[in-house]
Every structure is written in C-alpha cells, then in structure tokens.
Image: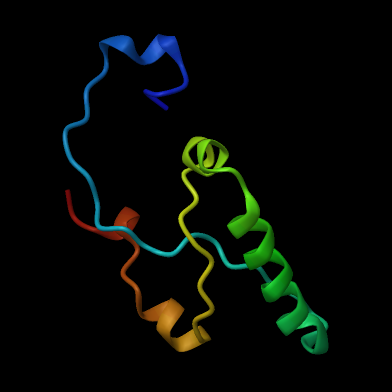
Length: 79
C-alpha cells in the first residue's frame, strides 16, 4: 500500500509477519485441477517483472489440503 498510495506517506511499517500462503484457488471439477494449476502458473510466469512486483506475486505453489491448513493464520496470533 505504501508503494502505491500517496495517502500512506505518514505511515511506517512496524513489523512483518512470516510469509504465508494466500487464498486457495478452488475448483469443484477435479479433472480440471491440473489444467487450472498449469494455466495459472504459466500466466504468472509470463507476467513482466514490473507487473509481478506491483501485484506482489512471487509464485504459485500446489500444496495438499493438510499442509495448507497446518500453516498458522497470522490474524489469530496474539498481539
């Protein structure tokens, strides 16, 4: 936000949480899951670096449900 909105000029970062996975892409039609993942990954990899930087997208990972749910939710951490 501080990179894109002049309103934030008076704000400063106090700290960072550990990186965590973003929201999952979900498909109800399982046979398309592999195609969806490959298509999204290719689209991300072909974005020009400045666009990837603006969107703060690094990569697309495929992890199983149990591994995804095992990652701690930073919003639930004590302050």
